[in-house]
Image (cartoon, rainbow, N blue to C red; front, side, top):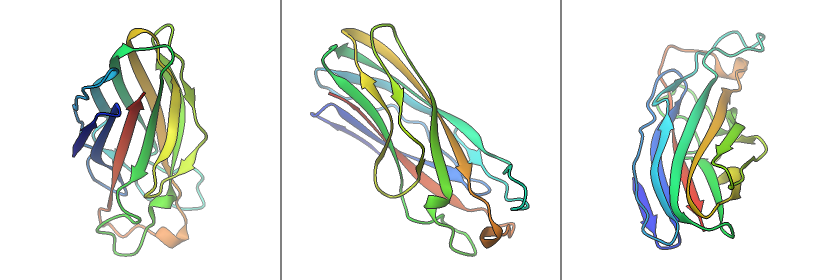
Amino acid sequence: MVYATRNRTTRRKAAGIICLAATLHAFTPLCWAPTNIRTPTATPPTITFTANDPDNPAVAGNIAATISFSTTGGSASNTWNVQVQATSANFASCPSTVPASQVRATCASVVVDSGATGTCSGPVNLSTGLQTIASGTETNGNTSYTIVVNYAFTDSWRFIPTGAACSLGLSYLITAN
């Protein structure tokens, strides 16, 4: 679902983080305001976690997602930010309850065009509330932004694999104002 509002906010909903298999859908919303958000995408479309021995610190399937977008009509006095939230408190279709908070989102990098700035926020455990993962200032004119976010599943003996696929939807909110 895509929302474009006059406060220069583009809201995009995408299915995504996966406990064994699911999908993250890309979106292409437009926002008609002084700063326009263009061509937002999130890749890869699927992030898969394979539950393994919780005594092993590495969890198979930890992966990076790339969120990119561009703006037109920006101003150096404006700011931008990217927020993420889980669309539900728990993974869907799991034989036992697996909370969204078991997934940690960590911004790894922010790349912006010359003149704009970008900074990663600290790591967050997913929740149904919006949490900022990156922010910065725009530049005059047109700018491209690329944010890399690492998603890691916190595996423990409480979440023993059962062979069932579990999914968790994500929603990203991109704001430029």
